[in-house]
Amino acid sequence: MLACLAALRRASAINYYSCCGCCCWVPLLLLFLIAGSSACSNGNCQVLDACAAASDCGPGLYCGNCPSLGQNQPICIRGQATIPTSVVGGLPFNKYTWLVTHNSFSIVDAPPLPGVQRLTFYNQDDTVTNQLRNGVRGLMLDMYDFENDIWLCHSFRGQCFNFTAFQPAINTLREVEAFLSENPTEIVTIIIEDYVHTPKGLTNLFKNAGLNKFWFPVSKMPKKGGDWPTVAEMVQNNYRLLVFTSVAAKEAEEGVAYQWKYMVENEPGDPGVVQGSCPNRKESKPLSSKSVSLFLENYFPTYPVQSDACKEHSTPLAQMVTTCYKAAGNTMPNFLAVNFYMRSDGGGVFDALDRMNGPTLCGCSTIAACQAGAPYGSCKNISAPTRSPTTNTAGSFSGSVQFTNSATTVHLRWLLAEEDQGPLRFRYI
Image 1 (cartoon, rainbow, N blue to C red):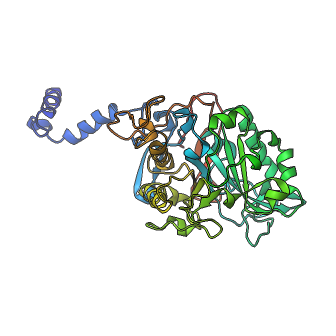
Image 2 (image 1 turned 180 degrees about the vertical axis):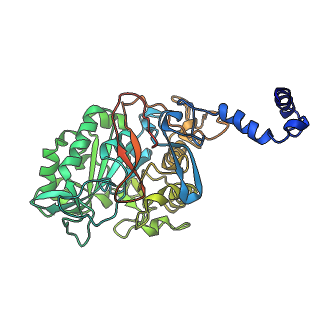
Image 3 (image 1 turned 45 degrees about the horizontal axis):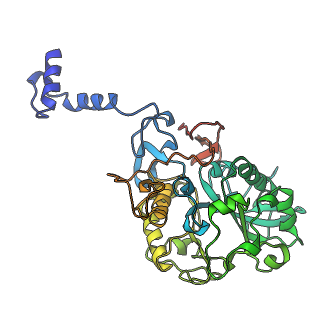
């Protein structure tokens, strides 16, 4: 038998079926075992490589699958964004594309109010702190008057109910304050769906959260479509928090920028995911307008389905980015807003962001081909798309996400598990 196995090994390099008669029944099994023994592991697996545990995957990756696409075999999937300013810095803020989470606070497994069964939709898997550590740079927050305070609610009719409430908004804003304090070169944008009627409610909220020191003044925001300051200038002046509201009057009353005075936006929900169409939101100027210099692309369905997000973040996402780019007069979105941002069949939202930033920042098809300090259009020769995140030197980000089974649902759940000071790692359970 050993002689036959030796013959099979020699034959496999020449002719798969050239083996001695005693062991012609083992080629498939033997080659499977050989391949299995040489498969990647111990942090050496890259995007799309088969894996059995998160420890198999490299930094910034986790081990998961996408059953809604018929992909049940676990593979290594990206879980962290490339911070574009760490590759190409010094450009105006509006030259970059940033990842935004839709309803950032509406987190699966977030505890409801005591004695209340929450009845609402969920949009994200992990905490705001973890979102920021994974490269999210924009948060969409729905703020309401509730219980003599300002709360984050995923509600309706402009009113927060105990079964749609999540938590006081100041809790999330304190997470933002902690992140900005710990990472002095990072910039965060907050977009508020605003149902706060308390006089000076937002003013006092952000002041009490300790965020005034990072505030980008409305008076310094560019008008008539001009460029924003460079990211370096914003960091130097500590103007590292941009806040926009959906209520026009609050720009004059509280110094909070009226969103559609500074950005265009496509229709959110189902209209924003229809292939071949990218209509502007009714409150927004046309996407091709040159009177503003920021562009928010919404890419999420009206009714979020956690298990479908990995499918939504595959080919359809890339197609919609192209559609909206053309609808905006060949202008790349500055913000890409999604649900369940880490779920995909490989590169997902992070790969899309790399491909959005590449042409704008360096004239390359992806930011992975950009060369720091090189002339525009001078690209690395990349034989295949690089979907592993670029090592981030602009700040220290860490986070950990694990899959668990909740007692209340059969869907996989993502939770912040632990913090460390090393590269981002994930665990698959």
